[in-house]
Every structure is written in C-alpha cells, then in structure tokens.
Length: 270
Ligand SMILES: NC(=O)c1ccc[n+]([C@@H]2O[C@H](COP(=O)([O-])OP(=O)(O)OC[C@H]3O[C@@H](n4cnc5c(N)ncnc54)[C@H](OP(=O)(O)O)[C@@H]3O)[C@@H](O)[C@H]2O)c1
Image: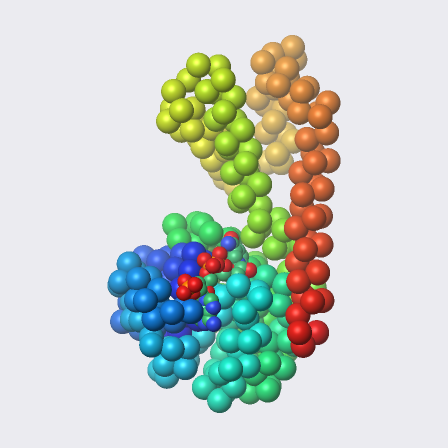
C-alpha cells in the first residue's frame, strides 16, 4: 500500500512517525506534500519519507490519502485535486469538516473515512475515533482500523459523535497538559527544581491514566483509594471542588465541541 499525506505538519508527521515505527509501512511508501516544497522536504527528511513537489504529485502512486491540513484549507485542497483523487480512499483527520462536504468538494469520486486521532499517535499511544461514511467500504474501514491500530487504540463512532470526540480526545490532551503545567508550577512554588517538578507532575498524570486503563476501575474508586479522610489529598481536592474544577473542565469540553460544530457549519459547501 502507498500512502499520500496532504499536509506534513504536526499531526501528519506524528501519524507518519507512528506508522513507520510500528512497521505497518516504510518511509519509501509514504509521500508528503505541504504548502511549500521546502516544508514538505523538511518533514520528509525528518521522517525518512518521500517529499512531493505538489499535492497532485503526492497522489500519483497512493492508494490511501490522508488529509492533514487545517480545516480552513481542507475543502480547497480537495476540490483542487478532483481528478487526481478519483477512485482513492481519503482518510481525513480534519476536525469539523463533514464527509458530505469532502465528497462534494471532490465531485463524489472518492471514498471517505473521517477520523480524529490525538497527538500521541507519534508515540504509538494514540487514541483514534474512526467514522466511516457511506461512500466507504468495509474493506476501507478495515484499512483505516489497521493503520490507526498500529499507532494506538481505535474506536468506531458515528460521524455525529465526532464533534464531542474531538473535544474530549483531540483537545483533551491540551487540557490535561494545562493540568500538568499547573501541578508542576505548584511544585515549583513549594521549592522544587523546575525539571523535577515537571517529572513528578507528568508521573502523576500518567499514573492516573495507567491506573484507569490497567485496573478497569472507575476514576472515582481509584481516587477514593488515594484519599484518606483528613489527609493531604482530601485537603487539595477540597480546593478543586470549591472552585468547581469539574464544572470548569466540562465547560471546556462543551466549548471545544461547539467550536467543532461551528467549523462544520461554516464550511463553504455546508
Ligand atoms: N493537533 C491535534 O491534536 C489534532 C487532533 C485531531 C485532528 N487534528 C487535525 O489535524 C489537522 C492538522 O493539524 P496540525 O496541528 O498538524 O496543523 P499544522 O501543523 O499547521 O499542519 C498543517 C499542514 O498543512 C500544510 N498545508 C497548508 N496548506 C496546504 C495546501 N494547500 N496543500 C498541502 N498542504 C498544506 C502545512 O504546510 P506548511 O508547513 O508548508 O505551512 C502544514 O504542513 C487539522 O485539520 C486538525 O483539525 C489535529
């Protein structure tokens, strides 16, 4: 299988890095295009893949095409490649741009699967939601599942669920990173060296995630195990609860979901 990556930026590169590291493909089967040839070359050299001189050039040998540009560019890129994309499977990782709009932009000649990976695909620890469109086949879905499984965990969802998935899983790592920064800053405030504070904070967040994933217990039950009555954790949690921490985070998820909905309703072909 040959792959084209339209948009070799952060997510496009993260995906290619993970795919090559997993052994599902090799760099010589991946061709990257970007807005400029220089930028495509820079990404390709860093990843050990091929650089294309244009988007059309990237598509020449590809059976599977990943659309990894920003939402604002995505329909323009697809509509400029109607002929070259014809008959190919287009896997879009673009937030907020609907399959129907991608199909319309391509004049219908493609098969579309939408996905929302997160940045951890570069470490092969990603979580990807896959939403097949009626234009795609069961075989296409299996191809997408295999690719994203090579770089982490996959879940099949309906396209209607992608806005909320984008908020929780696509934007979620940024919310967790803000928590990590705040936790580290608390350590620095208490006299720890910055690098040590960051390591402890990262360890705390990865411990929480690993406990949930590996024990199968609920976050609430696991939290109860760490929280002794009248102890240090309870003192800290009390401050978070008084400040409506849960409500604030839920508000952030709603705002990210609403923005995803807004992006899809603003797309030119919507
Ligand atoms: N970040 C996340 O965690 C996340 C999660 C899920 C989905 N996504 C989606 O991933 C997509 C990419 O995000 P990103 O963070 O990787 O953005 P990014 O780093 O800005 O990368 C965008 C890439 O698109 C290229 N590009 C721009 N115009 C182009 C054109 N006309 N033809 C070909 N390539 C073009 C850019 O090229 P230059 O380098 O030459 O400018 C750049 O390489 C977005 O649609 C986003 O919704 C992101």
